[in-house]
Length: 635
Image (tube, rainbow, N blue to C red):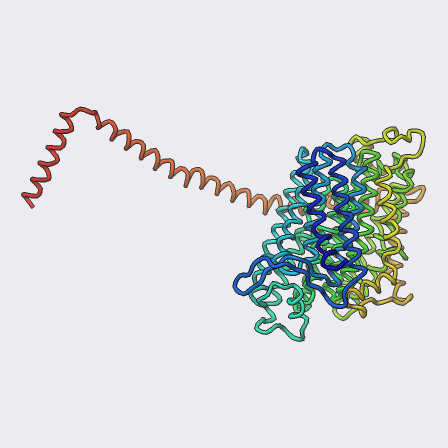
């Protein structure tokens, strides 16, 4: 099959599935689910086929839309290393989530609508990933935001889910405004919407003709605002933990490989432009390191498993941006790929535990028998080891490349920050693992949400009242697939292949054993501290942060950043909105109403003078004529 046909099938299959499932089979849940899965399977096969059979040079597959001012606008697909990698990642993770959702959403009354929305999201994400021009890219960037809004707020009867969906939508729009301005200015400077051409313009030696260094810095800064919003970087990061209000499969899809990774992919897509803005790159590097650090600290105090993984996602997105900002396209995208596998895996394991025990609390899950769910716990180990950076798991290799990219002059502070974030990642990851697999009812660990608080399904519901609890087969299968990926996807063989696909074989640095000693020691130190705090038989299972109650409160309240926003920005916006509402209702509307009432009064008075009596009309006419005649005579 030709690449053009494959690209069309890959892009259109989820759209068709969304339309058919939502319009014709929304109430027939199993049929809608089957249609969505069929669409996802077509996209997976197409995206992987394209990845494994790349053309020797980038391919443009487009259909004309319209032409204005000599600029031709088209929709279609750009097939190069970056888009092929991202498309395959989206296709694989979406397919795993679709299959997993058969079990997780089995009894949900909105199951048909849920699967249709997954199709919409996949179509938007793939169309953004393969976008050949700025217009298509921005349209589907926004559609990704819309689809995520629908999925985060899927359980719209829950006020918290509705609030989380609105928060995610609004905060990402803040970044999108800056990005949109940046895209307009970029088009004005390079006079083309073609993404590949824009990359070539900035990849050439020196700056583009007629574009100053300051202008490039401005463009990079505006584009990065969009990255900050979508990829949850400080200070636009606070929406992501709240987005866990959506169904867990949504968290696995949006917050591992797709929506949140869209910002990182945008950065990678315009990497040549960012490389021409060294000052902005330093600022971005500082923001990414800071984001990785503060989000890691928040994860150290959280008990909600999904929130721990949300904080972890923010931190790992920071690592991806660190790699890109350090100048390595391969480092950022390689970690995007490995993170997609192990973080989706961890979210799916979290969903299996929550589905079984009816709680998000890792202490409650452990005490209720979480480790007895063998396949799920295997996934927890595989994903957790990869997240922590334990050799030889996927996350170890991709983080090694990022840390290697920071071994340059002037990056020492950022390298120290990255090492600190890596240490905390190992600590909070194994804290989560130990509390689930090594529970201790006599420890000081506090259960914040007891098992069964959300209902749960329990052993009897799955037909294993007298055996070990386990998730349905449709949930276990994706966990096993992703567990394999979390183990092997980072191996040097895969890293070399990804670097070659991206045209950056020189960036696939293979660290010597001596270079690995420090990173491995830092990871092991984090694991050892977690063991002392949570793993040993006499471990208090309260953690190092519990030694400092004010610090623990600050971490549980996310460093009070949300509180600060509520008391400053949100309060100001609400006050301004109230002022404008008053001006509208009491000012403009009031003035209009007063004018209307005055007109009505004049009409009433005039109506009273029309009595319908002929003598009065004749007398009035004679009087008017007399006055007019007199004025003429005297004039």
